[in-house]
Image (cartoon, rainbow over the protein chains, first blue to last red):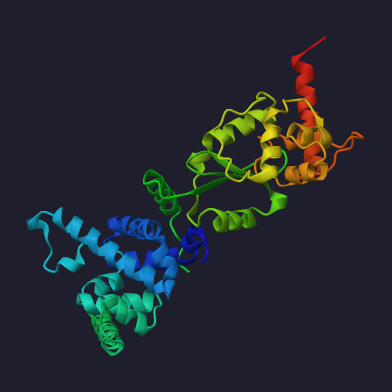
Length: 154
Length: 194
């Protein structure tokens, strides 16, 4: 097991992609920091994990969910968009399209395609079966393709 | 490959330090003898290493010996860095920093702690150092203890010479040892004019 900072250098960029995909831009840095602070607080569990990368993605998912709830409470009701998941996503059209996916599909796409986890690991992160994880990811990608080509045409 | 925004690491370091989550904080500073690795726990300065000692390897060893909670924390080493600058500029003779002496165990440790009493500009032989540590016959052990000094510069092992006056060894290289002896000799003469 490398030391903490080596772990940050090794997995930090991947966790950064995950946090930017799971959280609005202004909160992504918080999600990233919270993830690695949690690593420090629970080092022995991280060191004992079979797959450190997958374990980190799960920590990031939990950290981002907490931050998402916290900042959602601070948005006045009148300003809530129709779909809460879209708030703050404004980087690119693709990012916006990703944000509009159903939560399950979005997570599966992020964990598999952005974090690079195999479906067996995506499945444990989402507490589902590998088959269901693969299907959610495939559905998500299919939706992205449809919307992408539709928006390109329109 | 996604690049991390540079502020992310600094923010993480600040928050981790505020929550007392980092056991081994480090910083690399420039010096006349090349880059120096400074390492501190929350109790004090733990380790100084020369580039020749391989900074990554030193951090790796501390990971095994003390804790894997390692991170670059420049601010934890502000005072040590400033006092070393002053030392190299010749304006500081004694260090006023809290030390973490947990790496100075056993007889080597006794020798290393005895180094603290060899004043600026003075020199001792390895034989005299062995005697100061309470075992006059343990000359080779005293030399090994100097070679393994976890806090060179602060515990001044550069002030220890062979009985014939030759330099002996130095973890930072003999040029570094010569540089330090010259620095201290010059400043001592300047400070006490005839």
